[in-house]
Image 1 (cartoon, helix red, strand yellow):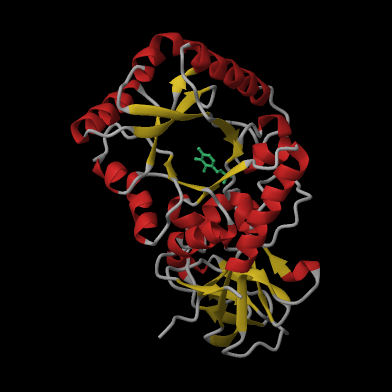
Image 2 (cartoon, rainbow, N blue to C red; image 1 turned 90 degrees about the horizontal axis):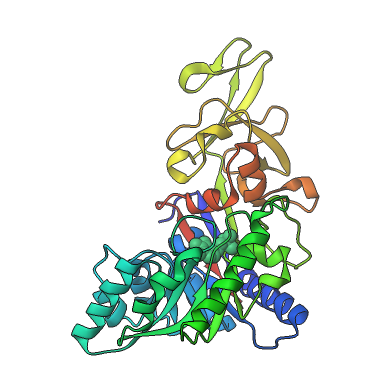
Length: 378
Ligand SMILES: *Cc1c(COP(=O)(O)O)cnc(C)c1O
């Protein structure tokens, strides 16, 4: 049995996007073996971590990245064999999974360094790690301006092996800030301090999707795209990389009914009909990830028409205005995706996010867990 609201995940599109991004970086950097760390945190941005990770591995990804140890363990259990970088802070985690499942930790604070070192010593192993430097994001990472104080004891840790140094940009999607350039310069400075202190990182990396699109100077030895792999360009940027959206979300009309002038629709009657109208009931609501703010702002596609969402979105259902569209129960509803070949017959996560002042990352990550993901791969 399968609900009528289904997310379709096109693993061929995912592979093609991965290859296109890699080609973009390799082709323009003159470095034939640029690393691409494929980001699959948060259930691969809602697309399904196991299937996405394996598809990326088959496409040639040589490293994947996730948010925490638990996600990394799930990737290993799904059969991922390439290195897995854990982005998150580890100071309050149970660290055993790092060793048991061969995950690569990020060390982003002195507390994390101590915790991982003592766990590795206890197990009598040496573990490779990526060092994170905070160059201005002010989230995780060793402060860039204090490395001479904080790094020596980390670099001297017998059971920790420095593999890479990285940072993360706070404003890579905003082309108008100076901070981006400052972070770039601070990062380069930080890497040289690491080397002066005796650290020998094999690679440096910094660029998420937006940074990768924006400035080839921050490609370094590896890039770390997430969103682009899923075929979504971070707003407000444009991209020349040929990408296809990986995810689409469809449903079916379960009921069609007439509304008389003056009558309201749904909870609170916050939408009222001025004229006789027809509405269709679609079995997808906020529990499925259809944000309540899409009421009056968002659209879906039915029979090739773009029809507005009207009335409050409920937990399991929403109503759309299908007046004069000849809609029948059973008709396909496209919530995210394409229905027809005209440009207006397509609704992307980016458009949906813009309608409600959100971001496309949030749209895909919040797809409900009860929604079946259907995978296609040729
Ligand atoms: C999520 C994340 C990325 C990928 O970001 P996108 O904007 O989706 O490309 C890269 N690096 C870090 C540290 C992240 O947390």
